[in-house]
Structures are given as C-alpha cells and as structure tokens.
Amino acid sequence: MYALREALQLWYSTHKRDLPWRHTQDPYAIWLSEIILQQTRVDQGLPYYHRFISTFPTVNDLAQATQQEVLNLWQGLGYYSRGRNLHATAQQIIAEYNGVFPETYQGLLKLKGIGPYTAAAIASFAFNLPHAVLDGNVFRVLSRYFGIDLPINATEGKVLFEQLANELLDRHAPALHNQAIMEFGALQCKPVSPNCKWCPVSDSCAALKANKVDILPIKLKKTKIKERFFVYHVITNQQQQIAFQQRGPKDIWEGLFEFPLREFEDDDKAAAYLQDKTTIGAPYKHVLTHQKITAHFIADRVENWPQNNFLFLDISDLNAHPIPRLIDKFLDTFVQNNLDVKPAL
Ligand code: SF4
Image (cartoon, rainbow, N blue to C red; front, top):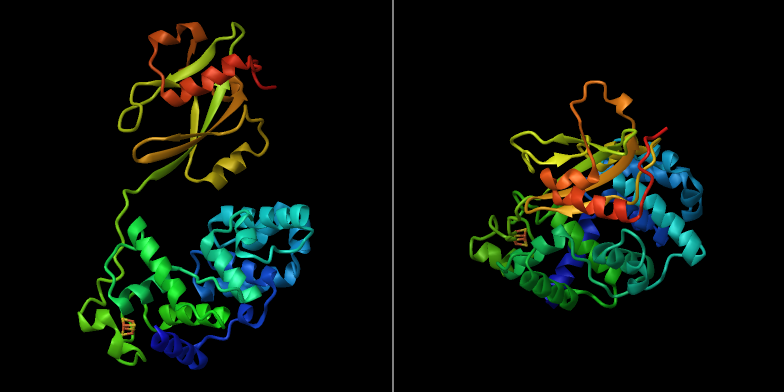
C-alpha cells in the first residue's frame, strides 16, 4: 500500500497536466469543473470551464442567471439536464446555504446532483478532507494493480473497491493523493494500451504478472433500459368523451388504446414542446422490463389534429377497450380529482 501511494505521488509530480481547477481550493470552481467533466473529456470540457468561470465567477452569479443563459453557455456539451441541474444547485446553495458550500462530505451529499464521487472530490480538493474518490480511473488502477476480478458495478465489488481506496488514501494529503491516482488512471494506466513498459509500479502489478491487464477491470453488462419520453394529449368533445387511438404493431402495448401521443427522443425535446403548454398534474414515471417511460399529459383540442382517426369514448365505456396501465393510472387520478376535462383554449 505504502509503496503504491508513494509511487503515485511521485509519478504525479512529474506527469500531471496543468489544469486550472488544480490551482484553486474554491469549492465553487471545483464543483463546476467536476460537473462539466462528467461524461466529457478534459480537452472538450476545458473551454466550457473557462467560459463558465469568467461569465459566472461566483455561485451567486450563476444562481442569478436565467436558465436560458446557462443553457446557452452549455450548448454543445450535451446532456442538457446537467446544465439545468447545475443552475438548480447554484440556486439551492443561495437559498438554503446562504451562498456558502457545505464544508463536509455529508453536507455536500445533500446538494442536488452531487453523489459520492463529486462529494469526495470537493471535500478533498477544496477542504483537504480524507475522502477517497472512486471514479472509472481509480477502479481501473485498483483492479489492475491488486488483480481484483470482482465486477466493479456489482455490490460485492463496490464494497471491496471502496475499502481498498480508503485504505490506500493518504490521510495527510488527500487532495494530492486523489488527484494523483485519477491522473495516473487517465494517462498511464489507460483503458486501452496502458503504458506498462514505463510504469513505476509494474514490478508489483498483479494484472501485469498474471497477464490480465486487458481484461481488468471487469464490468457486468447490464440489460440496457431504453428511456422514452411521451406527451399524451387529453382531448374531449362536447359530450365530455375523451379521444383515444389504437397503438400499432411492433412496439409495446400493441392494439391497446391510448390518448393521442407525441413521442420525443429525449427529455430536452419534450421540455421544449411543453414550454408553452399547460400540463395536467406531474409527469408519470412508468417502468417496464426494458423501458422506462416518462409521460406528460396535456389538455388539447381536436382541431390541432386534422388527420385524426380518434375514437371518442365515455370513461364508463372503457372496459370494452383495453388500455395500458399507465393510462389507467392517469385516469384514476384524473377522474378522482375531477380535473377540468374541457378542451384547451
Ligand atoms: S503495470 Fe500496467 S496495468 Fe499495472 S498499474 Fe502499471 S500501467 Fe497499470
């Protein structure tokens, strides 16, 4: 343990990249960099970091901005929900914490969008607290160096890696240690073609000895869950009947009846469509074996659907028409709450 810890810090002192968030202990700047770098390469995220920190030098500046201003700066980075969460968290820090970042790991975890990795990163880099970071780079270094073939995304593996990362942590220099092991994983012990030939710990690396470098770390393949974003249009006629249409083949719920539907490929596109519309209640989350559906419901007018082949049904007639459980759940609340079913104006 001690030898690896020393070797990592020595390696880091000569190989580290000069990155702006490594010159600060400001939790806001560190948090900003961590959120920007999620699912983003450093060279791609760097200009965004500069742009954000110069436009919004403090968390207060970010919180005061409009969501549109934040999203405009975020443009091109993808995963727009990260941009929206960034803004929401800044507002939370102003509203609930007087504009001051919590200074403990547990306190940081209470912020929106901050999980164990980001909390450990901020706690160690900003406050030098002894919390070990565990990201993809750290998992890789640990699994290869110690030759661990437990899957990194299964409970048993996660517990073991967490334990190991904490044992390895240099409690006297947690910020330096965390930076060193992550940088080592990013530049030296890379996912593909790690530089084992010139590695300072190759003599004691278990994966290298056992010829397992290419197969570690092990990650269990998860069945991919497809996310879908539905907007259902609740259209009523003068008799207070509701418009339904029948679902076609080759998809879920074949032949079942549902409200007129528009489907969007992601949450951002659905949100843009809903921007000037009034939704009925909160969105519904509906989970199927391989699909997760987020469904919004809005009131609409039949005139907006000139090519329709709708079937107008009384709610009491629905027994004769099979409907998906999701629509059923919505109707339960809809009828119970006696919500306004008149056409949208
Ligand atoms: S020898 Fe290769 S696999 Fe082992 S720690 Fe070094 S770079 Fe990683």
